[in-house]
Image (cartoon, rainbow, N blue to C red; front, side, top):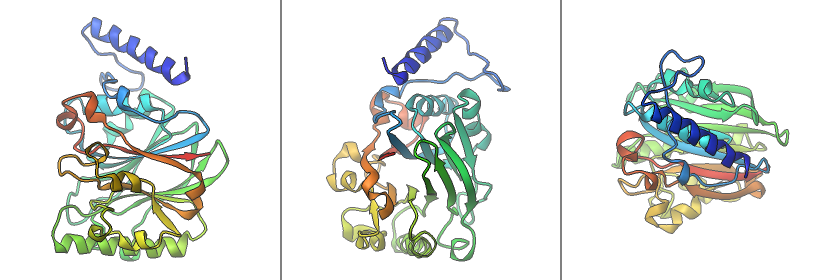
Length: 305
């Protein structure tokens, strides 16, 4: 039995004992009762081996949108054992931070920013394995063109050290302007150009991952607001390009539209380490995923250490 399987068994026993008593358990350090829920564990994919770095982007839609949302999100992240989750649409910051009290392996970073123009209560965040990753530096990209019309939510930039292979890499979490229409398309296109100029100038030799809710497709090419990245495929690739190209419903990250709009972009310094990308079909594990958790599916990318 692997460590992950053993961990899940322990959690299942723990959950059974709680439910048998028809009560919740007060976890150390928490000011209120909280039970984690493993409903979506069976829909998690990937490999927990330290040979791989697992990175996920997940729009958690108005987190928490339901009284049970935190239990589901915490249970999903903890049971995954993935190294890094970049999340968007966090409204209750303190609720997300409870994850680290439930499982000390995980730490939480939330931006200190208030988005301008729309959705003023949305925050960007990372939930990461502190036994695998160490923060070197962090900041909100707020200077110059980032502090303007094209970024309603300013990106959250973090430099990590991978404790497994001692390599450093940068992750940028973003949530671009939503919805259709020429004006919104223009805002996303300009945001992508600003981001590309920043990466070309500041991180031309660095390992960089840009994850988040791009609110635009990357296939077909002619419909994408990210054409400048798609054209420069010697320096940039979307790890989830095959998912986008497949046009299969089970690959869509936003099935309600339906479309694939959540992406993980990587710089060429990571091309050789990239293994695969997977859309995590959490909604297959429960009919109330949309109602109680999110209207977006997570997208996972796996890199070799």
